[in-house]
Amino acid sequence: MSGTLTLPAPAPHRVFGRRAARALRGAAGVLLLLVGWQISVPLVGMSSYFYPAPSDVVASFTDLVRKGILPVYFADSMERYFAGLIAGALLGVVFGVLIGLHRTVAVTLSPLLKFLFAIVEVAWIPIFVVWFGYGWKTIFLALIYVVFFPVLYNTLLGVRTAPQILVNALRSLGASRWQVLCYAILPSALPGIITGLRVGAGFAFRGLVFAEMVAAKTGIGYLIFEGTQTQQTARTIVGMVVMGLTWLAIDLCYLRPLERATIERWGLTVDAEQRT
Amino acid sequence: MRLRLPLIATGVVVAVLIAWWGAAWLAAERKLAPLGTLGGDRGSYRVTLDFAPERFHQLRLQEAGRLVEVRDRTVFMMDVTPAALHGIAGEYWVDSVAKWDGK
Image (cartoon, each protein chain N blue to C red):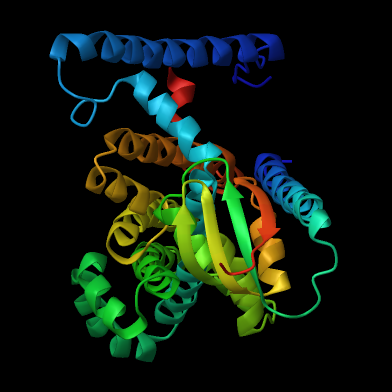
């Protein structure tokens, strides 16, 4: 007889009820903030340029959608973001695997990578503008640069900590180097890659907004910048709100499911929400 | 399936994009119908918006042809190809498109 006590899983309606209660509490907090903000506007007594009300922000959002500005800016930002994220992640994984598996490559590239890692993406944007002009190419390269390093270093960590027993087992069964890579090293490194991707995705999102402020004429970052330049501060806040909601959606729809499918599935972390 | 949500999200995005492009194409066909057959030559047109154009709209329209003048809600353009005109007419913030004799 086993000494292990196994608790039954909670009924689906109870899980849904708990999630709904949590969502309602979160929504109530946001609602409280909005009400407090709206009430504070007449008390502060400043013009809408300095202190726009939530109603001004909603009106500005509606205006931006009606005039076709927000959909185009949002689409341009997302196009740049995902293109830079995917390209940067692919390069990070490839270089992480190469450096992790080949000592010669590691010795050759490590000093250069450490040097480049210290240079923030912001410092590259002016030179990218000189080389490639304002717009898509500059922002794309800046995002690749931002995503590359977290994915590279986490992939490298994952490759170097792949269980040697698995590698030895495959080799003893006659597996080729490619098979060892595909069946032992990459699956072992996958949690590290996903962690790097999550970090890189966050850095890229922030980097996108800054790059668009400096080197673009469209995009959410440009909207945030242009709003204050044209004394339409409500538009700046619309940009900030769209940023926040977009990141929440990306995290909910892509990053967390990827984490659950890899890291949590293999028991390497516990979702903090499970403890609350 | 653990990756069901990303697949659903991607599917929704693709569906929205396809619907958007489809609606834009239909809107362009409707707005350009009164102009008849455009042929292959560049032409001059009056593009009327639902509001006074901002810098964003002027930049978008400049990609399609030469912006000559902006009067209230109307933008006067020259050297616009039929394909570019179709693109402009498909924008939901464009109210109507008409030929302009250049005066």
